[in-house]
Length: 185
Image (cartoon, rainbow, N blue to C red; front, side, top):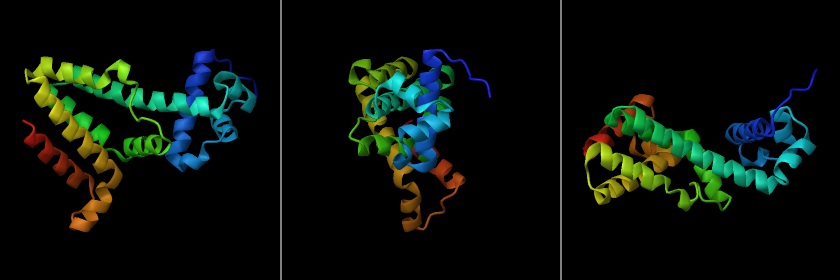
């Protein structure tokens, strides 16, 4: 089979994508250089060439995951009617996939957020302020409520619903997000 030519940037993106897929499919124990290389259809030495070490690869994976989540949120809030954007943000943040990635990052001792200097949450707050006219302080409290609730939903929503005797169905999750959203109007 002929080799696939990639730019260094393409190779790094494909390696990070392969690592993220392994993490989601098989958990953190699957994040070995040889497994990532196989998933990315690239040689083990080439992974080391691009990242230097597994620790550097995992650090860049963390940043990539955190930025992807933030960029999805910014995009949904910029490009949709405000209510639709906020509702989409609730869905994204409360997904089991996002929760697992966040939990893995925290368990590894990493912040699940992009670097503070990038001011991602402040950008979202400013965008909401401009689009809604609400005070930044009120929006800050609302954002904290949404973030805490959404991550909790993703991590333990199914277990908590079972203990409350509530069906764990897509419609019950949607109903909860609708209820939460109504409290923020």
